[in-house]
Length: 74
Image 1 (cartoon, rainbow, N blue to C red):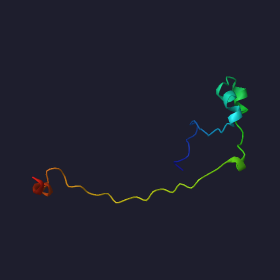
Image 2: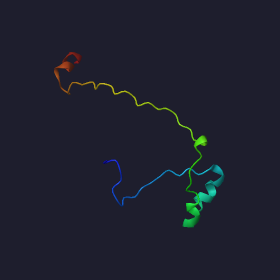
Image 3: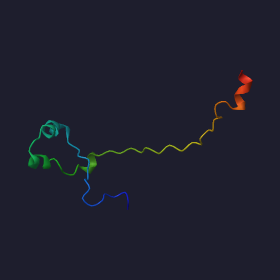
Image 4: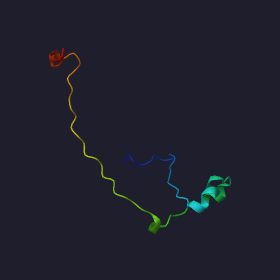
Protein backbone atom coordinates (compact mmCIF):
# COMPACT_ATOMS: atom_id res chain seq x y z
CA UNK A 1 0.00 0.00 0.00
CA UNK A 2 2.94 2.40 0.44
CA UNK A 3 3.22 2.75 -3.35
CA UNK A 4 -0.14 4.55 -3.49
CA UNK A 5 -0.47 8.30 -3.05
CA UNK A 6 -1.36 9.67 0.34
CA UNK A 7 -4.67 11.59 0.56
CA UNK A 8 -4.41 15.09 -0.95
CA UNK A 9 -1.11 14.28 -2.72
CA UNK A 10 -0.81 15.51 -6.28
CA UNK A 11 -1.50 12.79 -8.81
CA UNK A 12 -0.15 12.79 -12.36
CA UNK A 13 -1.10 10.95 -15.51
CA UNK A 14 0.29 10.66 -18.99
CA UNK A 15 -1.56 12.69 -21.63
CA UNK A 16 -1.14 11.42 -25.19
CA UNK A 17 -1.94 14.22 -27.62
CA UNK A 18 -2.32 13.36 -31.30
CA UNK A 19 0.20 15.05 -33.59
CA UNK A 20 -2.56 17.09 -35.29
CA UNK A 21 -3.55 18.66 -31.93
CA UNK A 22 -0.06 19.26 -30.54
CA UNK A 23 0.12 23.00 -31.25
CA UNK A 24 -3.35 23.57 -29.76
CA UNK A 25 -2.29 21.69 -26.60
CA UNK A 26 0.98 23.58 -26.23
CA UNK A 27 -0.61 27.01 -26.80
CA UNK A 28 -3.68 26.42 -24.64
CA UNK A 29 -4.30 28.99 -21.89
CA UNK A 30 -7.96 28.21 -21.16
CA UNK A 31 -8.32 25.50 -18.46
CA UNK A 32 -11.70 24.33 -19.82
CA UNK A 33 -10.25 23.93 -23.32
CA UNK A 34 -7.24 22.11 -21.85
CA UNK A 35 -9.60 19.58 -20.26
CA UNK A 36 -10.93 18.70 -23.72
CA UNK A 37 -7.56 17.04 -24.43
CA UNK A 38 -7.96 14.67 -21.44
CA UNK A 39 -9.60 11.68 -23.06
CA UNK A 40 -8.82 8.00 -23.42
CA UNK A 41 -6.33 7.23 -26.17
CA UNK A 42 -7.60 4.53 -28.56
CA UNK A 43 -6.28 1.16 -27.42
CA UNK A 44 -5.74 -0.08 -30.97
CA UNK A 45 -3.29 2.78 -31.60
CA UNK A 46 -1.13 1.99 -28.55
CA UNK A 47 1.98 -0.13 -28.87
CA UNK A 48 4.10 -1.87 -26.24
CA UNK A 49 7.37 -3.73 -26.36
CA UNK A 50 8.84 -6.21 -23.94
CA UNK A 51 11.87 -4.89 -22.14
CA UNK A 52 13.19 -7.57 -19.77
CA UNK A 53 15.04 -6.53 -16.64
CA UNK A 54 18.74 -7.41 -16.98
CA UNK A 55 19.95 -10.10 -14.60
CA UNK A 56 22.02 -9.00 -11.66
CA UNK A 57 25.67 -9.86 -11.93
CA UNK A 58 27.80 -10.80 -8.95
CA UNK A 59 30.01 -8.02 -7.62
CA UNK A 60 33.72 -8.55 -8.08
CA UNK A 61 35.61 -7.73 -4.91
CA UNK A 62 38.77 -5.77 -5.61
CA UNK A 63 41.80 -5.84 -3.36
CA UNK A 64 42.16 -2.64 -1.31
CA UNK A 65 44.92 -0.23 -2.40
CA UNK A 66 48.30 -1.07 -0.93
CA UNK A 67 47.52 -4.75 -0.44
CA UNK A 68 50.12 -7.51 -0.91
CA UNK A 69 48.73 -8.38 -4.35
CA UNK A 70 50.51 -5.36 -5.87
CA UNK A 71 54.02 -6.21 -4.60
CA UNK A 72 54.90 -8.36 -7.63
CA UNK A 73 54.34 -5.42 -9.99
CA UNK A 74 57.07 -3.22 -8.53
